[in-house]
Length: 539
Image (cartoon, rainbow, N blue to C red):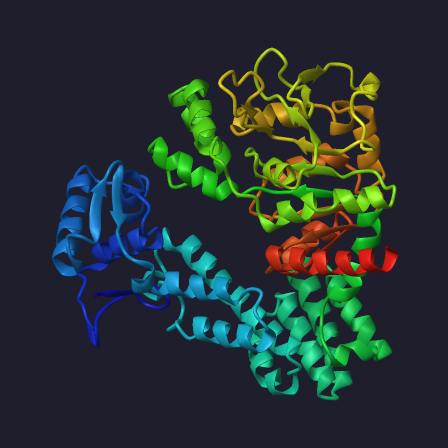
C-alpha cells in the first residue's frame, strides 16, 4: 500500500522506495487532490491552480493527460473521475496529513504527559515546511500557511501540556528558538516567560514581556494581549500559582458556574456542527465549488434547485431519531434539582435543527416548551410557541405573550435557527440556512423585541454558557448580535472551546466572555460532578 506525504516535499512511498511522480504540474495535481482527499476537486479549480486565470485552450486535455499519467504511477484506483472533477481515494493511514490531524484530535482531553507524547508523535511526521516543492506556486501559498498554522498550533498545545505536567526549565532552549522564529505568537512567548520564571530567572521572564511589547508595537501597532499582561503582572507579584500550572483554574471555574446554574440563572447556548451539515448537503446536491460554508452550499441549492428540494433534504437529514448527547442528557437532568430549590427552570438557547435535545428531556420524563424561529412562510421573522401537548401559537405580540409561557412551570428551549418538524404536515418547519436567510436574520431587530417578554428579561439577567461554538462558526456572530446587540453580557459568561487560539480568545475577551480550554464531553462530565456534590451538600 502506497504512502503519500505532504508534510514536507511531496513524496509517494512504496515501502522504503520512493515512487517517481513526473513533472511539476503533474505533481501539483496530485498534491491538490491529496489536500482534499476523499472530496471532489473540480476541474475548474485544478486548471486555475495550474495555469492561473488565463489558461491555454489545451488546459483540459493537458489536465486529463496529467491524471492519466498519475494513474499509471500511483494506481488507477487512487484517482477517480467524479463530476465535476476528480477525487483522491486515499485512506487516512496512507496520508501523513490525515495521520497528523487524527493524532492531534486524539490528544485532546488526555492527561498532560500522554497528551504531550501524542502531540510529539504527530509533530514527528513533519519532514520540513509543508508542500516545500511548491513554495513559489500561487495556489500553494494559502495551503502552506494553513498547514503551518496547524503545525504551530499542535506545537503550542504540546508545550502547554509539558507546562501543565510541571515541566519548564527543560523547555527554555527549545522555546527561545521557536520564539525567535515566530516573535508575534503570544502563546509561545507566554510559555517562554513561564518556563524562565519556573527556572528562577524572573528578570529574564520580565525582559521577554518587554521584548514582546516592542515587537508587537513595531510590527502591528498593538500592545500585548490582556492574558500576556496578566502573566507579566503575576510574575512581578511572584504569585504562587505560577510554579504549578498556567491558565484558568478549572475547579474555580466550576465553583463559579454551579451556584448560578442551580439558581436558574445560567442560559446554556448550544452550537451545531455546520461543517458536517454543509458537507452532506454538498454531496447530495453535487455542489461544484471547493468552498464548504453552509450558507453558500444552501444558497446554491436554493437557487439552482429551489427551497422545496432544499427543505426536503434537510427534513430527511433531521427527521431521524438522533441520539441525545452527554450535554443534552446533563441539561435534562437539572429540572428536578431546580424544582427542589424553588429555582426557575432553564432557558436553553440552541442553533440545532434536530430534536436530540428534546429527546433527552422526553427520556428524562420532563415537560418543556419550544420557542422556534420561523424563517419562511407568511409568518417569516416571527417566533412560534410549541406547547408540551404539541399545540402551536405564532407569537405576534411578544410584549403581551407572558401567561402562556413561564419558566416557573418548565424548561423553555429557544431554537434560534428553526427546526425540523417531525410530522406529516410540517406546518411549522423552517431553517435559517441560506445566505438570504442570514441576511434577513441580521436585518431583524434584536432578539429581545421578537421573543416573549419573560424570555427577553431572562436573557438580560443571566450568565451565558456557550457549548459547541468555535470561530469557524461565523454564524456565532449572528447569535451574539441577536442576543446582545452591540453590548456585551451584563453577567459573567463562559465559553467552552478546546484548543482555542489567540484570535479566538481575543474574540471572546472583547465580549467579556471567559474561555475554558477543555473538551466538551469532559467539561460536562466535570460540571455534573460539581453539581452532584453541591446538590448533596444542599439536600
